[in-house]
Length: 98
Image 1: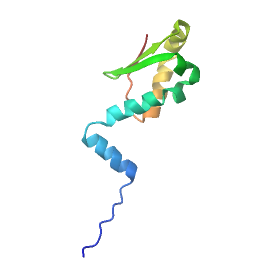
Image 2: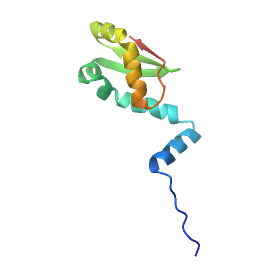
Image 3: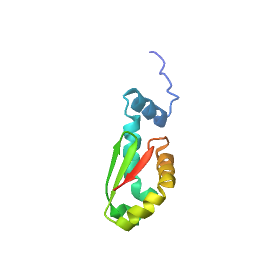
Image 4: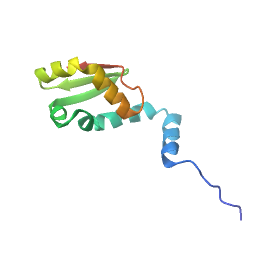
């Protein structure tokens, strides 16, 4: 009987490696960020958000409140930093509020 190989790689490292090998890591981070939108931005903003779409490192945020849109527009650099921090990588270069 041959000895069993020991796998010293953690589950997280193995998953990260698999996502990279299939070129899915960026998409995975985007989905993770979208599902974390309420946690990052809060319940009030999440309830006024109608849609989030990624295209070419731009995040399009559709809101149903003009006053909130203006407020978020003025804080877009801070929001971008929070989102990238949550994703663990620079996935958002620009945010467009609509």
